[in-house]
Length: 314
Image 1 (tube, rainbow, N blue to C red):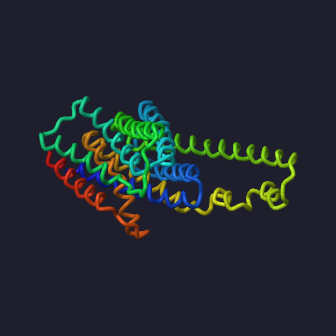
Image 2: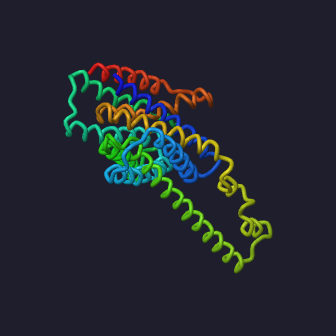
Image 3: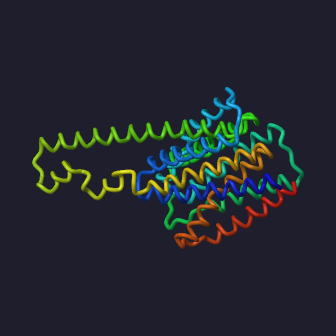
């Protein structure tokens, strides 16, 4: 029962973090949001681990650092595939793969259930698809590249869950500290690389303009790119900073719930239930932004609660 509750709670909290991250990404670039949220989560977890304790063993450090690398890859692929679209297909595909990979690992590793438990797992996978479905008008068929990225992202998210499951029980929150530390380092490095690439592109455009005759207004836009509308959202960190920090804190809380759930119960159950993370996003979007929840998503939420109840009984 407790494992099912923790799994659903972790999904809702993960979805809340995604909602905050989405709002922050409207103000600054998604890469900056990810970097800030990782740093904020790291600070929160360092404070938490100082009170909760945990053994800093080679296993805890190694698995935690590896989970940070895998998590960064998962996020990068997720953003890339959703940018390609259509989101209505690729988003639930990512969620299903993220559930199937660790679920399969858990079943192979010896997780067993009563017949109602296996039925619940199948019902939960259907719920994942319905909850993650994002209605899009005129959605086109996804490209092979988009599908492969979605599968890759889901596989990396599932691998992250498997890696966290390998961490020693006496390590406490130590693996999560390493996870956030590695993620923050990688994402800030990505921010630096992108900034350097942008400067080089700007310099090359200026150089090209020096050898061509252009209208004065166009030349001024090239020489002063920070004044152009397209570049304005990318300038500075302040507009989305509070939301990005809040995203990191909420995401850290979700990781703690996930870790506790995995250590108390089965990886199979936790992986399927946490894959319903879009539920938290769509519920907050409905409450805060007054966005409409599609009937198919309501059906998914109902199935998710039913599956959680069946898993609790199993």
